[in-house]
Amino acid sequence: MKLSTFVRPEAQTDIREATLWYESRGTGLGLRFVGEVRTALRLIANNPLRFPAMDDEVRRALLKSFPYAVYFLMETEVVVIAVLHQHRHPQSWQMRR
Image (cartoon, rainbow, N blue to C red; front, top):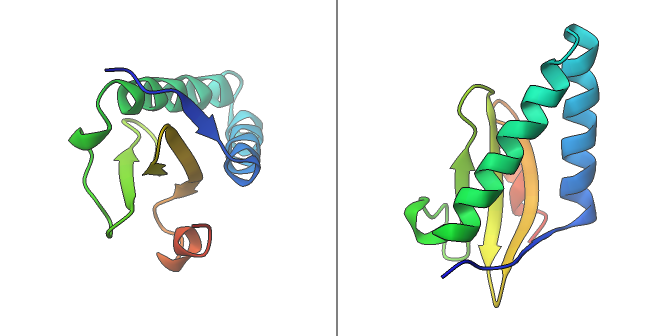
């Protein structure tokens, strides 16, 4: 069962900032990043339980070629709360619940 996905504004900002940063490092790199985020969102929507739980509510999907993770909640839909670099302090996503 495919769930609908809602990306919170803070997570949209995460994606936008990372995309701009990667694009400044190389033409097309930002587009590759966005493509991987979209792929992760599609996989999450199709089977959210395949991704490990970080705590009682939040699950995490790692991107394939970038050191980023998509943090999400499962409610009546998938709610993306953050898209963060893996070297950020772990509490960065915890404050967004």
